[in-house]
Image 1 (cartoon, helix red, strand yellow):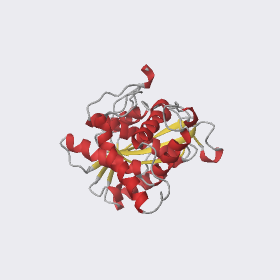
Image 2: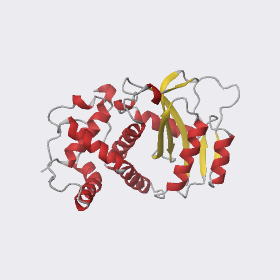
Image 3: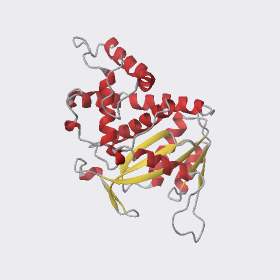
Length: 279
């Protein structure tokens, strides 16, 4: 019997069936390695995941989790372990493969799009973990995304906002080339300078800069680059990402993976995505 559906962010049975095997295998692996000896599992993994998605979706502090979820400290404990053990990255990859195959694509992409987004930070973030994006006039952090042509996440890095797209792009391209060797083409904006383009060439990736036509004023949809702008828009459906609330950058990256896991699991089960702005 499925548990009661308490919140719009809760997992349906169909979405839980997509996620459950990875979490169950993680728990079995920990017990097999003697990490949980003497502590039999007492927490429902589904309810833990729903609590994490609730935080990501609503943007509340961990301590403000409703009392019908497990204790917030327990939920955050699982969130930390799943982030450290790469569970969110693993789920993101598995779901991306399924979405691409459902769209009639090869499970591994051959092209990607790069871009960044500067966001303000909360008081949780230490001053040394922030920077100033002079172009956007934002003090905070910068999210560097690599996506496929469907807008699905391939790689993410979170840095201080003063880190240039070129510097972060070099690391991002290296990660993408390592994890996705089929990729031979990348599109980016003019913030990615010659250094990043040359680095991509050494990795076997042709980085093409998509520029605005001279004299263009106002908003203009640019070929290829619009897909990553749409991905940033998808992330904004998760209120926790409207600002960077995470103390550590790797936890910010985990929240981005969670948002994409939420999106792809809904797409695979043809479920609508409620918008926090209207709830």
